[in-house]
Length: 475
View 1 (cartoon, rainbow, N blue to C red):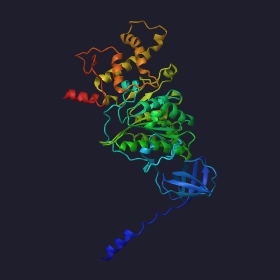
View 2 (cartoon, helix red, strand yellow; view 1 turned 45 degrees about the vertical axis):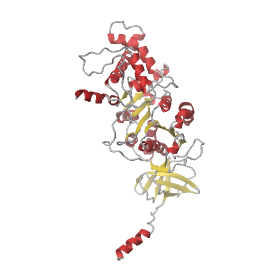
View 3 (cartoon, rainbow, N blue to C red; view 1 turned 30 degrees about the horizontal axis):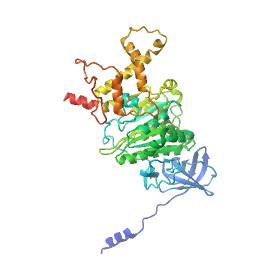
View 4 (cartoon, rainbow, N blue to C red; view 1 turned 90 degrees about the horizontal axis):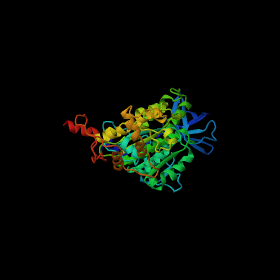
């Protein structure tokens, strides 16, 4: 045996060199920010702050010169200057697996439902892996969410990412609960981020119910959690959805709310000295939100999908709120819940005039698309002339489109409303939509084709999209 072979053989038997861990020392604590010196750790690395038996987990969020800024994920108490800051070798990973189904966990992946330990063996990084946008499967099939107004007029495609825009107390949680119970998706992942702690139990018991919880995973991080833990809970929710998508499942992910996620990042950024930009929101907020949203969607060929609904809290019903405005630009559609409709007892309070599903034209045929547009036109026409109609200032016969809107508006409003315990499937929604309005007469001279005729079926799940139908006609 040559000397080189002998050395190589010895190298295989020698233990690997242990990494050198350089501890730091806590020097300053202002608000939620911890400052340490002498720490050899990178941004995003986890650390433990140890002092007189207290052990608090923190994460490096920035640095300046020889100082490292850390943000705790637990309540900080009992710390003093000079406490040890020890880097943790393990990455930001949490448990993930089939055992999570039917369970409620916090941002650490720990069960909070009193059902005992979970026993997951798989650990996954919270940051996920980026999918090449050219490798993603396009959105081509509708997803049945069990809500008639959405299935018919605002059809959602598998892998679509949508925002649910509303102020407080307009029915966001009720709508999310209905979709969780009624959807045909294989698995539902619910993230309750930064909401009131009281709502967590109410959502699980009263809105979700045993049936909805059985095939769901709930990640709860209420408003009193540290901002870093709220960020981690949102990432954990997305990581769980990614795990099941990798198994080929069609996942429905509901996150309430994206605004609280942005506010948590704002708290962290302002605490470490980042300057505010738009209404108190630092630039990093508008960078973190797309990074989270882009992880949802369809996987590569042969994989599953994540259809995501993110609630966006519009402060004072202001649709131009910075978070709402930036979210609307990066999502594949938005549903606006109207406070006036909720006050009138119209549930779900979806304002179809302000709402849009940008992928709808890719998943429905031309007849379905035209019928949905007709309903939106009737709704919009009536709302535009609502005051004149209410005070009797409109003279019947003055405008044919307004006369039609007045005649059909009661049908449309009744069609768009739905009971909390009532499920209306996709095909049933299309049948009821076709029966609600008078049958349009086909005009052979009109372009585009696809007008409705009595008895002609609309789009069904998995059917040809509007784009595919037009391409076939051109051929």
